[in-house]
Every structure is written in structure tokens, then in C-alpha cells.
Length: 161
Image (cartoon, rainbow, N blue to C red):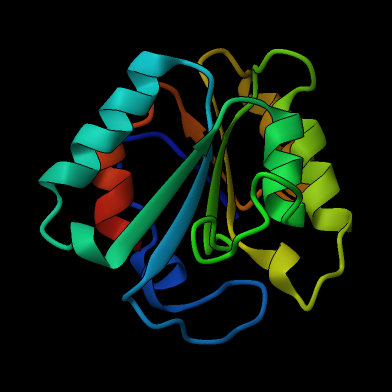
């Protein structure tokens, strides 16, 4: 587990082909990504990066605005109960500072679930103002990586799709 400040290179083997918790190799196509973000400009940057990506057709990004929507999405609750339209994610990116519940509460909730190992999807927390000493406790509760905000979406997507 590591802190990742973009545009630094991510550990490619850990992200592209190797699921770090299960130790299983993952196929590259059909990446499903859930982004929990309430800033429309950040969402637009992510969408623009995906549109520029040469393998954009192999990825699907779903956006939710807050932790409660993210929990509903992961649980398959209405309006996210159609898994064809709202697939279970291979990767989760979550902003720490959200209205209502913080991103860390979503992280705890995801890691406490025990639905067929799906709770092991790599979980990326990001924040603008997190002191370095606060990163290790996030890793201990289940964060896979910490990313400095704003997220450099071109680099992030290039390594997971």
C-alpha cells in the first residue's frame, strides 16, 4: 500500500494485472470504475481524460455525488439495482471531503461488507489537504492508495484501463 502523488508513476503490476488483496491476475478489458465526487469540474476532468484515452471503450465510469449514493450503488439499491447499467466496480475512487458523510465512512462500510469478496476492489482515497501522518491510518482501515487532489485522471486511467 502506498501514497501516490500524481503525476508520479503508479506501481503498474499492482494495479493493471495483479489484484493486491486476492493475489489473482485481472484481465485488462471491461474495467468498471466508481467515482464518488461532488465537484462538477473534477467530474468533467475525469470524463475528458476518459474520452482522450485510447482504450476508453473498455472502461465504464459511474459517478455518484455522496457517500449515501455510493452505498446505495454498491448495495444495488434503487435506482442502482440494474447491474447492467450500474456494474459492480473493479476500482473505487472516493474524495475524502464530501457533504454529509466523509469518504472514510464509505471506505469502512465497503471493507466491512462480505459480498463474495467484492469488497476487495482497490479503493483510492483522494484529498487536497491531508497531512502525510494521516495516510497510514487510512491504509489500516482498508484504503489501497492515497492520491493527492486534484487527481491527474489521465495518469490514473492509463494505468487501470
